[in-house]
Amino acid sequence: MSRRHVHAEVSRLSGRRIGLLGGSFNPAHEGHLHISEAAIAQLRLDEVWWLVSPQNPLKPTEGMADLPTRLSGARAIARRPDIHVTDIEARLDTRYTADTVRALRRHCPGARFVWLMGADNLEQMPKWRNWTTIFEAAPVAVFARSTYSLRALAGKVAHRFGRYRVRERGFSQLAQRNAPAWAFLHIKLHPATATEIRKTRLKQP
Image 1 (tube, rainbow, N blue to C red):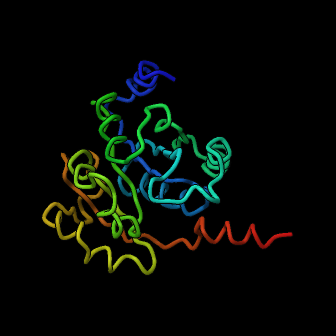
Image 2: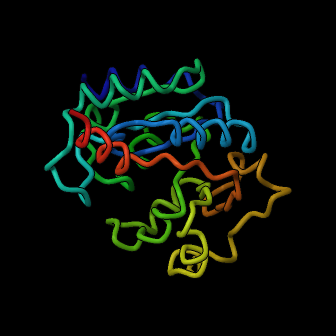
């Protein structure tokens, strides 16, 4: 799909609060749904987009299902009209999160995007290309994840943007804030992981 068609798709979203949950979704699972539902409720989002990546630059291609398979699996898990599964990164031809967020901001400047991610990603974020520009392009919501949360909150990213952290009473207005602004949400933890699901499938006869 051309960039013109992508623009037409997102231009109707001006003024809406949209959470962006990126990842390989290899496969999508109930944990993704859990985070999305928490984001919609606590951040008062109108919708969440699952951005199914053509190929995460930090993950190996071995064991990665093809994009149509991952899209289909994600749509089967989403199960809500306010969660949209999309391959828009493939259509925008963006490989890195920073480029994706900037491209979406250009195509739909009136939308209020919030980048959603787990604490494990906050910890490893300094490995991402142009990671500081993500915080400068859109508010960020980080969700607690077992064994990662303490290290993430003591890490480089949390330290760099510490003065921009939004406390709990401001969560509902995070989408309305100008970047940089970020929040750490201590939600009930969900045990599902894509890694464990793949391991289980490999053991099945």
